[in-house]
Structures are given as C-alpha cells and as structure tokens.
Length: 184
Image 1 (cartoon, one colour):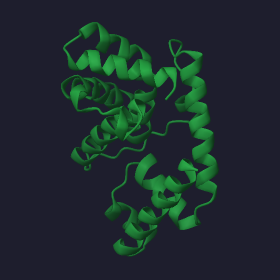
Image 2: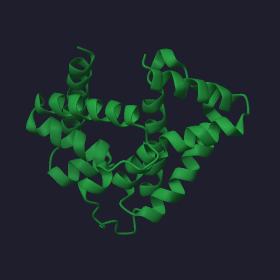
Image 3: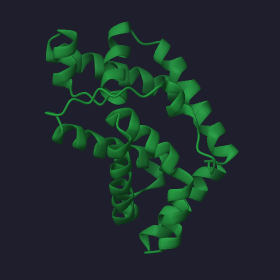
Image 4: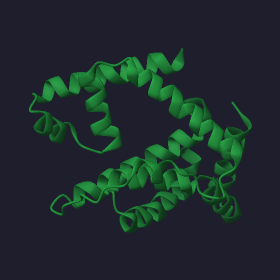
C-alpha cells in the first residue's frame, strides 16, 4: 500500500466518523479522476457534474463500508462513480447522448492533483493498457463497450450483432484475463 492509498483510507475513515473537513479534502484529491470517469460514460459535462455530487453523497453515507482488504480506495470510489453514471444513462435512455469527449480532455489532470496521484494513475493506466493487448479482439471490444462506454450486455449484444451469452462470456473471460495479468 502506498502513501496515497493510506491518505485516502484515512480520509474515508474520518468521513465515516462524520468529519466534513476530511470529505472536503477527499473531494479535492479525488474529484478530477471521478469526474473523468463520469464524463467518459455520460459524455455531457452537466450530467457528470451532477453525478459527481451524488457520488460524494454516496461516499459520505457509505464511507464506513469501505474495507482496505477488499481493494484500493480509489477503485472503490471509481466503482461508486461508474454505477451512478450507469444509473443515469439508464434513466436517460430515450435521450440521445452523442456528444463526443476527446481522449486528451479526459486524460488531462486538474491543477490540484498532486504528482504522486498523477504518477499512480499513469502507471495503472499503462499496466491496464498492456494487459488489454493480451485480450482477444472480441474480449477487448466488449470490455471497452461495457466499462468505458457504459453499455449493458444487451446493448453490446445488439451493437455487435452477437448473442447475449457470447457477449457475457467475452466480458467474463476478458475480466478474468485482466485480473490475472494485473495481479502478476
């Protein structure tokens, strides 16, 4: 565990005890990354901004549920952000979300992100990119559609004109391969 994780774990613990200053500090340190996740899925900054507030309300309410043994604090917070974004997308299915966000905008860190956090995220992104290269084309495409674009298995199945069971298998096997690669 590195010092950034230790700091975030401490802030989560203090937030769980009702320390609003800790939550504000947590927000300052992590909101750029969470906003990028939300923006990638929602593709509209106003929706991502609204979702970001919901995410921190959820973090505040559920901070006591975080356990360091189950994973890194940033991964826990990103999963909260991702699920919130997917909920919003599902509720807005009738609306056409086609505003494109350039990859460069998503990768640019905010001014208040410290160098250690940027380095950790860059290293994690490089490792993930390397592991993604080891997947089959179908596995990689399905994982990108599910986790980066926020599509459901059903939406992926329709988009790729592939049976739902096949899509689920590609996602499951791809995730297993990524887990093995990232843990080695």
